Amino acid sequence: MSETRVPDADPGGPALAIDVVGLDKHFGDKHVVVDLSLQVREGEIFGFLGPNGSGKTTSIRMMCGLLRPDSGSGTCLGYDVIHQTEQIKRRVGYMTQRFSLWEDLTIAENLDFVARMYEVPRRREAVARALRALGLADRSAQLAGALSGGWKQRLALAACLLHQPRLLLLDEPTAGVDPKARRDFWDEIHRLAAGGISVLVSTHYMDEAERCHRLAYIAEGRLLAQGTADEVIAGQHIAAWSVAGRDAPDEVARLRALPGVVRVTSFGNTLHVTGHDAALLEQSMQSVALREHLHVQRIEPTLEDAFISLMDAPAAGRTPRARPVADGASR
Image 1 (spheres, rainbow, N blue to C red):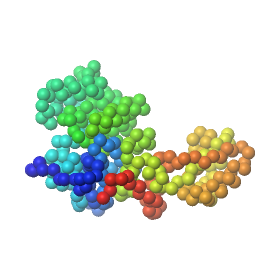
Image 2 (cartoon, helix red, strand yellow):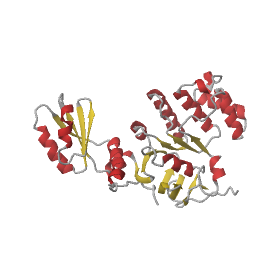
Image 3 (spheres, one colour):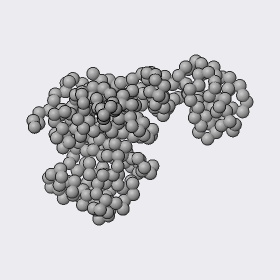
Image 4 (cartoon, rainbow, N blue to C red):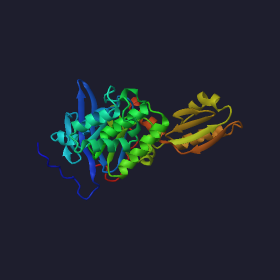
């Protein structure tokens, strides 16, 4: 198979790690990915979000050469995603949703086995380097099956990095991991990105999404929005208010019945009220503010508000309000 890389479509634009157009995939009668077009820049952390069953994993597998799309085209690290999949696989680190290494081998044995598979030169030095980099050296003789979720995560990331990939594809890598381990993991991801490695990561956590340089949201196999966190929020045209007070939780049903109110969410004694008609919602909130026992205040919508709005869009059969795209992010 030829090693020839496909030239960038726009030589004057940003260097792209992933550049795919119109990817489609069916499983039987189910259309799981619909006309996916996506670009990830080199050295960028790109968040890939969506509900369970939305097509995230299928999309990732198509982009890294593990699954052939039914139609569409594109490149990953400059190699064709249809015809040069072996070249892509050798240059990508893929971390699956579930721990997929060998639980009856030690940490060091797992890394040595992966290094053998990738034919990593100076294998022992590479394994020792990975153990040190991920803080695994003191546990190298421990069986992988005895590790906690956070340590399994570190081991899986170390295995992904052994062959020095230029792109990491991380499929919900922190699911079920405690907050400190998640924070440590993301610190490491940012360190890797600063060193030039591109990262495409799927996640359900809003705090993780906010740590990405850019985001894309997919639902029912369709890409509904992409851009920076601020662009995705702005694209949903959400107005948000807080209603606070000791009796605020008792007001949920009444607030939901007001004109302009789309959603009411409880946070202790504070209610988060959102809608899409800013003027109408403001009128309703002004009427609520007249009640002495409640404090009403306009607030900025959050990324979670935007994603809930996007989740509601397919179910309601309406078109998302916007698809913000950063410069260089689309053809």
